[in-house]
Image (cartoon, rainbow, N blue to C red; front, top):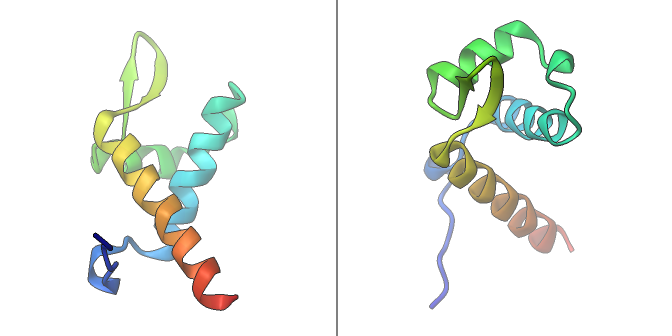
Amino acid sequence: MTIKHSPMNRIEQPLQDALLSAVDALARRRACDIPESTIDRLVALGWLRWSAGSLRLTATGETTVMKAQAAMLDDERLAA
């Protein structure tokens, strides 16, 4: 079964880029590289959360990252 991604199901490109950059920074243990306004927005969306002074990706955030990565792969395939 093939799932077609509708543009309505995608997050805005700048927000997607911010999320993926934040996840990369967290993976490198560089949360200090994430702008405070980005952190506030991603926390408000429920994609990141504070836990004992550390910034963590939520389950919803993980799902959103997977969807964003899948959409990027689809876009690359369409461009090829």
